[in-house]
Length: 192
Image (cartoon, rainbow, N blue to C red; front, side, top):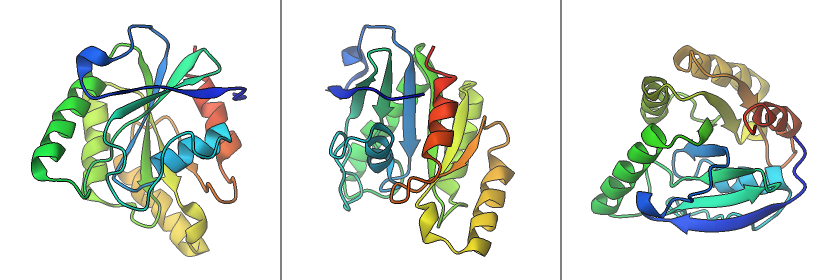
């Protein structure tokens, strides 16, 4: 997949505000501060397209980006630790659960996992949820450049142990670009 253009489309806080257009949606999900927005900026080669922050919980809405005028990349709020109150987390959970389990135009969910913490219970639960919903998903191990060689192999093994139905596992570094082409090839399969 070659990304020729990428633009912000809209932010959504409720299911009834989702786009009516039935373009394929590739959804990016992961724990707070795992690097979802950074990954989107890296994939599109557009620094600042998706807002990034070192503060967990920066993404608080479902953010839609139009890619090549043929599909959406969708940046979801992170799960797990975020600097927001419990009520807000609960509302996010309801919104995201409903969105992921019922949205017909979702063609792929990309589960981002911090390669430095590959065995978090919240990631296990998300993989189980995606499998329960019957959603095709792939795994991206983010921040891969920060690991030593031995830890890289251990991270992949840990993720393989609980993401049995994932379509792919890609090691990714937004800094070096490692994994970018491989991931774009995988995404192309699901963009129609």
